[in-house]
Image (cartoon, rainbow, N blue to C red):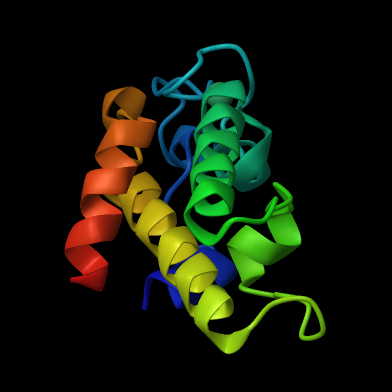
Length: 127
Ligand SMILES: [Zn+2]
């Protein structure tokens, strides 16, 4: 469901809320430096980028191969069929879903988007 919500942009962004109420800022809730569009909130925000980089680095350490920090992979669950074993694809997919769930549940507050928090949530998910 989280992946569906991301693909279909279910979550309200600062820009959408600003269109409904001009008194609400359209700036990103996380960095306060970019307009809070879905693109910005999903991947362009530096805080989100840093989080995705830490997630893909951690996944790389877990499976023993470098995992590119590719938005097509982590947002759309597209994993090249020829490169990864089924087991590693499941680990990458689960890790990315865990990260997306964290982003969705912390949509307004990036303080919880840390590598350690992700790893703890990921381990709870796979156990
Ligand atoms: Zn931002």
